[in-house]
Image 1 (cartoon, one colour):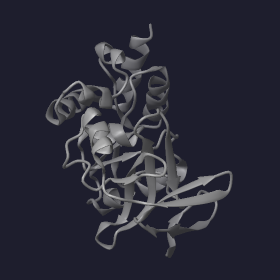
Image 2 (cartoon, rainbow, N blue to C red):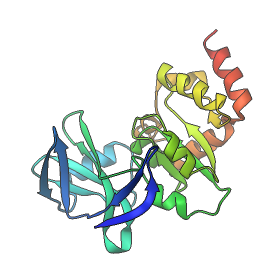
Image 3 (cartoon, one colour):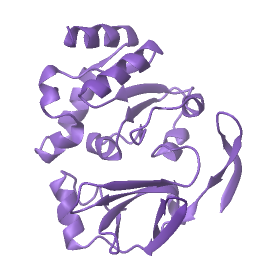
Image 4 (tube, rainbow, N blue to C red):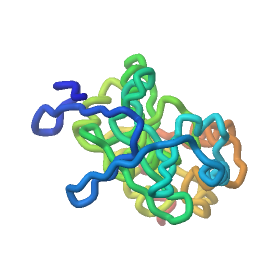
Length: 232
């Protein structure tokens, strides 16, 4: 079904399309393919546990046998089993597919918008990194730059950017901190791991990861200063 005028694009109003979370949907070169979803099988569960997640954390995930993918729902209304998108990750090959039916192209946006104004929202690059940190008040840019429309949508919240520990992540920290946002600036040792999901794979607990994030969250000005010091 389509919900008129819930969100606005940079240039025009858009339809916010939602679908039932019953099929995996892939759009490739303007062609769409749908395959039925089923509960996680043993191989899918082993893959997810190997990525550091618990059974409870992945209880909403499904499996697509035709593509050999685990499928992560982007809930619009969980009670109605409605999603506005999904992410598919192959359990044997290093590939994934993101399918978002309309704007906004971010994960977990409906939960974030349900929070009281002035709440903190942690912004991650990937869904797996967001899940690894365990904050409910989080979203993922799906590897993209956070666009002006989504920033406008979240203007009444305190965005805290938690990006990868690499050159690309550091460049984005400089960009967002110059726009006035708080950011996490990683310790130098973190650059050996690149992202938070690697820590979960190594057995680092959610509590330890959350403590690390809070400890390494800095004001916009200090984030700029620390990033520049790292690269001196």
